[in-house]
Image 1: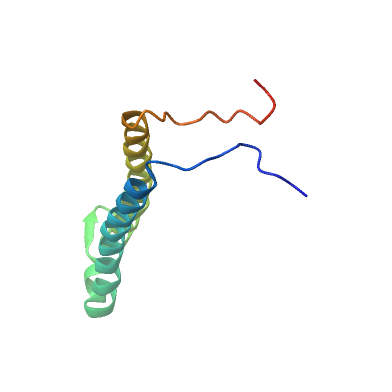
Image 2: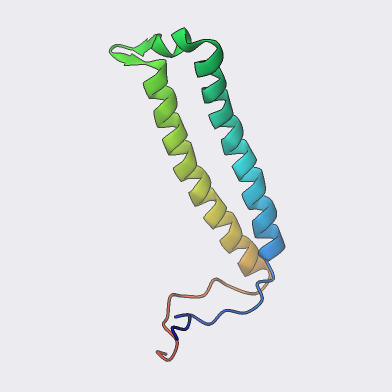
Amino acid sequence: MHEPQIESGKDPAALYKSRLGMRLFIAYASLYGLFVAINLVQPALMGIMVLPGINLAVIYGLVLILSALLLALWYDRLCRREETRLGNPPKSNTIRGED
């Protein structure tokens, strides 16, 4: 049977990570929900030209993509900081048995 490549134990920062993840998810879901609501209630707004040749729908879509990336990077940074604070720095991707 295949075993995990990296040994893992109890994560002391697990509660922090899950709470942070939920908060960031709610923030992103709110931003996305607003996008959906605008499209349902006032779809003509998405056709407004914000920049020459670029409408609000394109700008909002790009903002959604970039915000997902930024939230993921922020989540990683905050989780690493919390792990270090707890004295459990993030483990490297060393394969078990290779030291």
